[in-house]
Length: 341
Image (cartoon, rainbow, N blue to C red; front, side):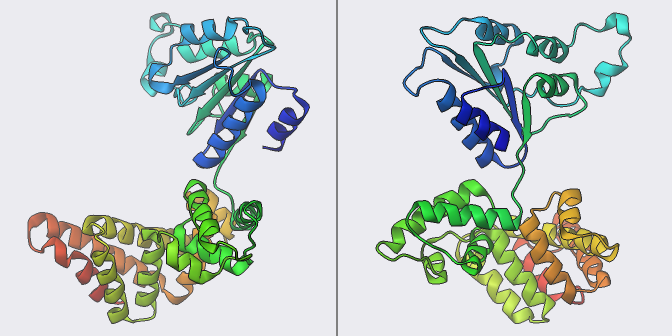
């Protein structure tokens, strides 16, 4: 990301950029920064946006080869064309003489021929780093993987966003906000703006403000429920569940989140027992680093056998539900009250 900032600052752009990864907010942010830096906001003649479902390689090449209209550059922004995914296995298994030229390969060949007057920005959810297309972008442009920030960087970003609103927030309160509203940056941006407005003339944001105006994520409440179970407080866990029902959360959604949480706890516990660090666990499981930190603290109160037993109970309850032996409304209550925790 630092390279993109420098390119914008120096107005010295690569011919092609690839922004990919799990953090949609960062991808949107830097795609927009590049767009505004390459072409003025009012210049619609020299800015083309292509959505993935309408991507055509030949049409794309034609757009890129078009000279800018009374400007130094034109920008072509491609959203989720899907061309950076790995090639399907069945295509690879065809005899060479039966294979047509792969569109990705022809696109890869074109990357090095993009005119100096065009800047291309690809925005993707994933990219196969072994592919010819990815390697072509890396050689002739810049590929940037934008995944979720770790807890430290996310807290710094939260502090910066509040500072821009003329507010301050302590590290503890920023951590509380992440625990309350989740770690998705797009969602946090909305909550930060709500808090900035709610705080009005006050200089700082407090926990009470977060509880008053921010939307609490289901994943956060699930931590409360599983914390209560770990403490052996089934009554407290049931009360948390009842509060969720009052907010009209679908039982099936609560159930899926709860079972998923225990599956993640199992993975974290097993990896932690093998001596893996929190960063290594986050990288190998895909769980957000902040959530991993919370789970690492939580697994200290759980035995591995208890987690496995709870998951086994969940599988059995799923079968009982499908066979009609239990009702959906009793699903979560049975999971809370049974299973040895």
